[in-house]
Length: 476
Image 1 (cartoon, helix red, strand yellow):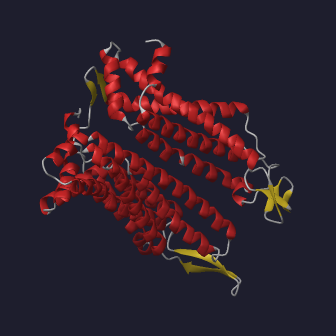
Image 2: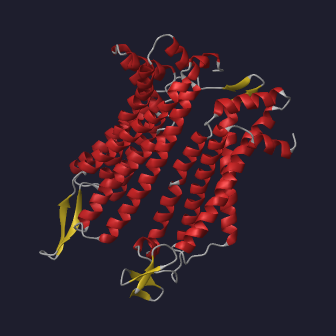
Image 3: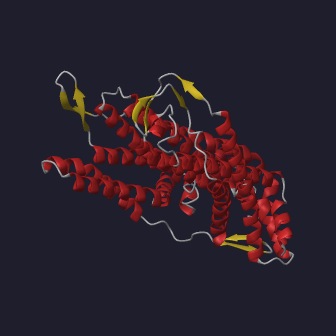
């Protein structure tokens, strides 16, 4: 197959395929912006600035900002992986026709990879253009003594400052590398996702996972939580551990619980499904429970990023309380720093929720034959809709709760429940208690569950067309 033919087949399709291409390009543009922003922060030198944020002025804080910006690429990649499934049934039939016309499986794979690569290339070029436009539009200084700037000759007051590092110009080679690296990552991800798919002249066959989920990850969650809960008790009993063993125990417990939570979501969904199926008489819950038992990974594939965002958010909330207690809550610099952390986590949560929306919508469309048969047998569409919603929320609600507990206990184990704060009356530091931020933690949990419920409900807009009687004749 010639390159021109591959590109023409990659660009073919309906409006749904155009939506998939548009969302892929938007995700690639967002990733390009995040990478260029990270490179810009890393390139800030002692002669650049000053800026309105000390996060940009202080060289020692630049690695943390860069890591936060790079961390945004993870939920974007997950969102891109979910967007690749939009309009998949129609695309699968089109590719089956190409296969029937004589194309080899490798050539069909190249068509799919070319579609993703072209979409991502357009998005990366758009991201470069937006980055350049923002540098020009935001290149203005704010007048006034707004920041203490650490320049090459020491700390000096600044009469004006930039909001963003628009005075830093990236080398053109770095910009080109980013513009090329983003489509390359998308193409590699697409090729990796197609490794378990066989393109045949009669459709696309997915080699789905047949082995049941293992319970070992859930045991890791219990062991990790137990270790995190035992660290303060061990510390008090031993009369104070040294920093290194204390940190190692806390990191080990948090790592075990986090890894077990992410790897054990399928097992958790299956256990919940079996428990609910054996005890409920409601049709919606029974349908959801049976589905969770038969395919426990379906409802948990798109929730990993949201779970991680809640876990990291809970840990960051306690760390914020510790930092503010050490400075009596009056340090605007640290408040602004943790506000930036909250913003990054909020963006990651929004991207995770968008990925969940795409995954839930694709699940409704992909199982349209089953849903149409259930409705044709007399089940109301409302019952099917509530079953889809329950299938997502039943494993997600306890997963987010466990993530909240793991993040909080991990931060408590690492940073403790007390902090040393300077007391002006004593002219000396004193130990103050650090409480748990129950209000913000509860709000974060409720917002995450509510956002997941809302996005899953939005995916039910496709349910009416997916349960049409004619869909019974559609390919599974």
